[in-house]
Length: 479
Ligand SMILES: *Cc1c(COP(=O)(O)O)cnc(C)c1O
Image (cartoon, rainbow, N blue to C red; front, side, top):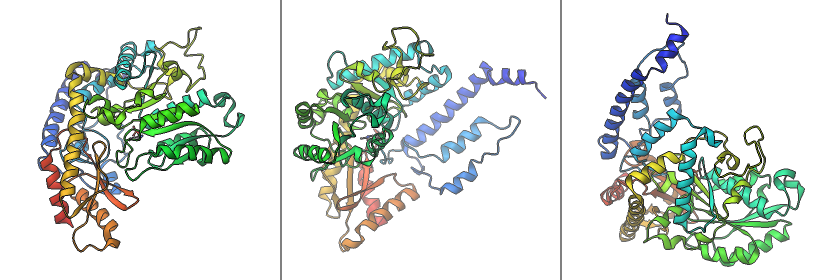
């Protein structure tokens, strides 16, 4: 029986790591080849959760056993294949393999970044990536922010800063009962994490004042004043407006210029949830959709959506970079000693996380090695493909486009001749179930005012027009 010391030496043995790593990369490369070609591979190898559980039981051995490749083969075979050209579901991208290699490096180095000393290179790369992103958005000199673990954490971070800036009292130190109750004006189409953030801040359900949207699911700017008055009458002081740059369900872009004007007039914080759609700024043909984003006080932008990064990497950018210190104004004195606590380089002062991944590494590397045009072209191509898909749907008498797509999210339904309106919703649900359990396609669904719709996000750069033609044909046959 080897001693603990011997087992430690084996677990950290560089030569063993080299061999295992080469094998793993070979295994992943074979997988990638199959997945990107969609060769005899169901997009989602469907199985009910309880059945999957039996394949991954928690009965861990006390002594070393088995091979990495066997376990990984099972993981690969039973996961959702996001690189499959017929993955057109949620807004989670087919990550660049180069970015995956960077995550490998990040995990090995494990430079946790709460303080500069714990992640010198990661801190510098984070700063540079954020400066570049702020520049793309057109934010002024002095803007800045942080990277955080996802859009949900990002929106909470931005709203905490908004509260500190506009509440008129110290809600962070004194709690939400230290002053008048607050609210945020939020379009009905906003992602649920906005309401969740508001509840985390302790403002309850009334902390969100809904703003109606138009027939294209865009915030109606003329409804803002009415929403503000409604909130005031209910005893709530509005401090901010949230606008969606790419709403989750349909990808609609709120009219940012009009919201910015309203915020300026009323002295409200202007937050843009651009988790999905802020990437539109990268494409010269599409950036008009986010005109006005440069006037935002804060913007959330997920690189794991429309910048081809693996989860998670989200930028929270502030027009005044120093605002980013206000989201979490409390000082953890054992980490941040000395007077100069507001250095850009002490990232943990400004994030929900203490320790976090070296998340900038993958984006910094991909921007450096692939160049920025790759990303501009990707955004332009996916948005254009969505427009072509919309045209295909409009030309087909048995399909109905929900709304002209603003980005690469397309919602539609199948309405074959003779289908009674009362069965429309059930048909979409059944069709989706059929397609995803067979593994033909992975797509999702959403309920819009006119009923249940199939929802696709054309986020995988390998998806082609031919795949979308095949989708319509497959749906017809399944119906
Ligand atoms: C995806 C999304 C979110 C949530 O972001 P995560 O990174 O999944 O936490 C928030 N807002 C919008 C508009 C989104 O599309």
